[in-house]
Every structure is written in structure tokens, then in C-alpha cells.
Image (cartoon, rainbow, N blue to C red; front, side, top):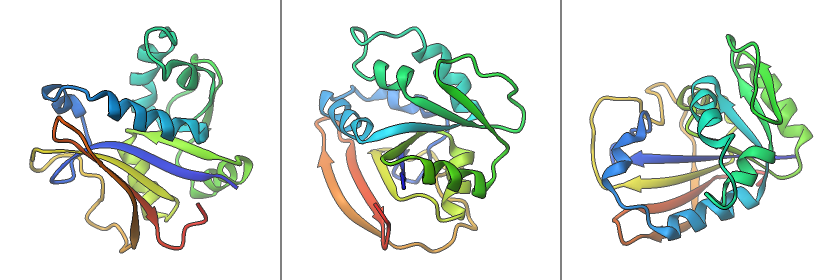
Length: 185
């Protein structure tokens, strides 16, 4: 049985949407190493339509020489949750259909390792509401934005999380890994 591992760039006030605000921070190579460790423990990718449509042109032509994450992003099976996407051109992509917790559980049951989720705010909020997220990998940027797409919706259920990892980077970003208390991970 797999585990769903969500990776997000997030502000102090919980915003994950449109992370162009990260551009004001130099990318610390140690952040890339942390993301690489996360990817190494995963054997599938789960994405919402909007993130898929942003990632496909950005990653599909990228090589390992350009970015060490390219082989993972291009060679790994990608499950795309979308009610509107009819065709997925990116290698190893499968359209799941509209969000359905049962369909996601089916994917989890068919994967032995981690299932990597990046971005995909609407999908992640649904996964959290259905208690399907096993780990949160949060890169917390030291700024606040205000009322914009937050990680947790206002009606998110109360959930206990246990901190398993923390790292601080020279650019002020803090990496926090939380495992859902009682998780099968």
C-alpha cells in the first residue's frame, strides 16, 4: 500500500497558490537535495489538472543534465485528476477522471512506495478533507500574502500531525515534514 506525500511551497500564513512569490528567494541547493530525497522514495505522481498543465511543458523536454529531477518527473507514472482533461500527452500519464476518494484509494492500494503530489491545491485540499494525506513536506517561506489559496480550507477536519524532519536554509526557508498521526507511512 502506498502513501500520499504532499510537497508544497508555502508562506507563513499558509498560502500555496501561484508560488511566483518564491522567486524573491535564492534557491538553496539543500532544498533541491530534500526534494530529491522525497522523490527517491516515491514511485508515482498524483497531480491536479492545472498543475499537470503547468508541469507538462516545463518538465517533458527537460533532461537530467538540466535538472536532476527530470528523470523522476518524466519516467514516473503520473495520475491526473481532472473532470475536463481528455488527453494526456506527457509520457506515462493516466487520466483518473474527476476527483473521487475511492479512485484515489485504488491508486494508493496499487502502489508500494510513495505517491508524490506537488502543487495541485484543489486536489490537496480534497485529499486532506478525505484524510488521504500521509505526509506533508512543507517549504515555509518567510513572508505573508494574505487571503489567497491556502493549504487548508476553512472546513478542513481537525487532524493531528507529528513533526518528523526539520531543516533551515540560508535563504530563510524552513523545511518541515509532518506525518499524519497514526499514518500507515
